[in-house]
Image (tube, rainbow, N blue to C red; front, side, top):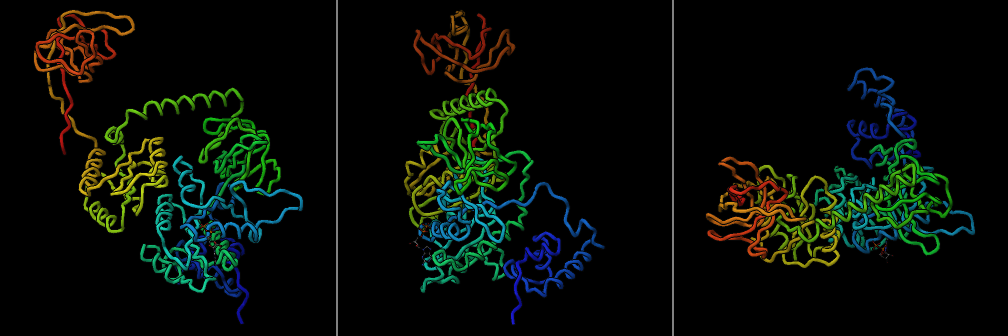
Length: 575
Ligand code: GDP
């Protein structure tokens, strides 16, 4: 007769060891896969304890107190924050609803339950925080603001449909985020369900199921009937323990907005997830370009609470304006300080827009980049075109620069493609399409963030541009080429403009915006740029040899009669 089974984290707790270590030790001792050790027969626990001590003894000599207990860690385990991703209609919403119905303790009658964008499920006294908005767009739009809310991603794949386009997208988004993943193979109640086919497809993509000896955890479930959902939740808790997800209620506040809107009755409301520290009623916070004193904190069941600690989703009221998802909260002491910070941020945002918008070209952006990594999303019109483009990209190599294809898919360039490249730190982002259109929302998102998006009809143009982009990341090499010389005949000091030199061009030509070196008695006294160039009070782009012109050197008012101005352009050396 089968003995009653224990969860591996229960055993770990009894043994006083971290779950992670227990699982690793068991794996080393020949117990394969994470799932294989998710449950342990009652009688095995004692054997495991002995084995574990022996195992440690072999590795480290006599186990010390610390070796058994693990080193002291800051904070304490907190509920993991989980996002649900996957292809449309594969059952993300149904799964979130089922978990909500079965694992959120019902509140007393009369209360109003309303969704705040996240909820907490309870499993044997332990909590998991679920983000209620499924899909990779929400997941990545937060990351594009530099905030990592999610600790664990659940990828839903319908067993009757298998891996589809958005499954592939979601996989790439999860990979780019670097968060651990659990696959929920859904709809196993359906007669045509084929979980093995899903496993096969995922294995082919490099995600080998744990029960096939790989390290991707896959749990068969039915979001509709609830079958397997408990296993999925336990697996999430297990991964949370493995990852040692912690938060310190007394630590520095880290709280990220996941949802916000303007409530007609209550004003701006925002749901945040506290990852570290504690948020309290009456706290004064700055969020993005708005601020406020927290008037009320409301939990996921509509109850007023006084404070929210690590892992808790909470809706807050009292902000001046609606902050965008992905913004972080910052605690401040005084309204004056909050207002000053907000003003400064608004100014910065405005400046950034002014500078980045009209002037930036694809070339400028790439030149401005100092990163030696090109992070690319590639979209193509068909599988054939995609394969061809991918093959071509695979042949590109530039020493010193990494080309990383974050995602390659079929279809138009979408907002989530832009957000994906935007979420990657320390890399030059680039979105390219081969024979596809750019969704207007994607265009807007790219413009806002200054991300280059390009489409091509000829594969050769695409690869050439990427090659060029990679070379530019190495830093372009320029040489100065002298193109002309002018002599200063007169100078004029003009109010509000500065000193203008009346010149004659002795040789070559003078070009607006070109580099200029000022020679006085044969010695260079200044090097700068030609700010404006006029002929008979008209702005001109260039002036040829033999002609007279007015030259204003940018930010320099010491030009004198008799000075010789040497004019240079920068020419890039093709590498
Ligand atoms: P989403 O687009 O991924 O959020 O998918 P939904 O949760 O809206 O589900 C799409 C459809 O699949 C709905 O008609 C659901 O009732 C159905 N569905 C979801 N999960 C299951 C399941 O486990 N079994 C069956 N038979 N149907 C399911």
